[in-house]
Image (tube, rainbow, N blue to C red; front, side, top):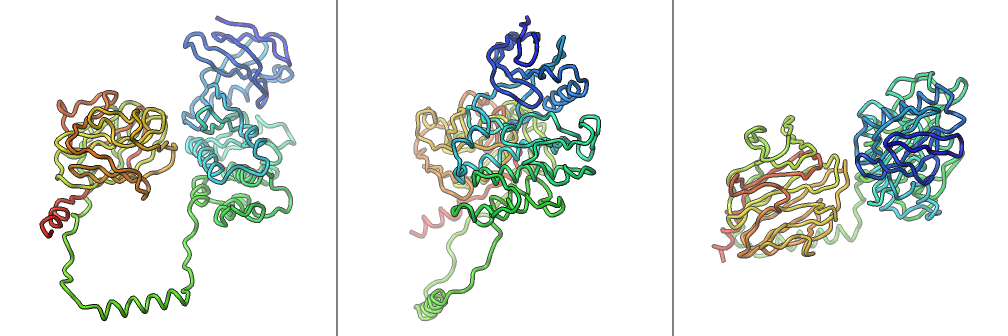
Length: 490
């Protein structure tokens, strides 16, 4: 099924299999329209090559190149491409419809810059998309707020790879002679000079976007550091942005990931010793020396941390989905994935898990044994950002007893679960979140996980629900001796 589309720039364009509707806006090299892909009954965006460019083989090649580049970059922070078609008088790309508008539109509502946490979140997501492109050997070359779309879920998605090139390749065929490719305000100095370019030019553009998100201004000529424009910007954030904007590529960060890490991790500093602190230290030391000594034997201690991944047999222990084990790092695919790690555990124990969700929008889980049943601690469950222990006595997190913790793809998290017969305590990234009362209650993973622990038992397992995830670390330690020892001492 096809429908002819009359664009503002040209005559009718036929897009096969798509019912084309209202004009949405303008992208690089063409207009974008709302469409309906009939075969899959879904809304899409249709990008049609502008009329004045449709007869130019260079721009037809560029549009097709954009479609091919975007189609192979499958990442939640990159707009997905579904199809490319050469039409009778031009070409069209059929893409994922992202309905929340562009980052430029968002900036118009924040002329002084976005709130700091929101700006950093946006930058992390844009960077995740760029990192995926760079890992696939592609540089964008035209990063700007117009080329970042914000979905209804609030997630940023990079789009418009019309100027993208393979890393370390500078093909003159896709650039007009005597012109530099890109948008002037966001172009790195090396784009004007020509010659060899690499992924650090995308980092420069992201630095410009960061400056704009934080201050509402684009950095032109001689400009102040962000913290000089806006007082609530931490110095380490300001310093990271200024480094990304340095004119020479070698002066910037080695990668976009390093830039984002610097935005979030201030360099450690050793404060000077203040007199009042010194006085307190002396008094405390004196008090300790003069205090009557009693039995100083340390109380019962927890057992050592044990690596739960080390003994995993990737074929025998998989309970669902496909997994890879690369030097002790387990990675799941886009199916419903569960892998068994331990067959037995003590009555009292702690488990800590470090993971990074690589794609998808669903939960990452730790399955644990308590009260002779298997519980499920989910983060980002039910596509509502719900978190905590599922199915306590048959009650789901949808009943509202958990806490909210939506995950960001590409970011590492560490979860600590402390399991006791009457209580399970959950902390994320060193912050205690909630204690769940399981006293006398039956636990069971939600049926959506498609795993019955009675038929295929496991005392400890990890899983990801249709969301590829890398598990860098899973380890546990016994608390039996410590807790039972303290109980005996009482």
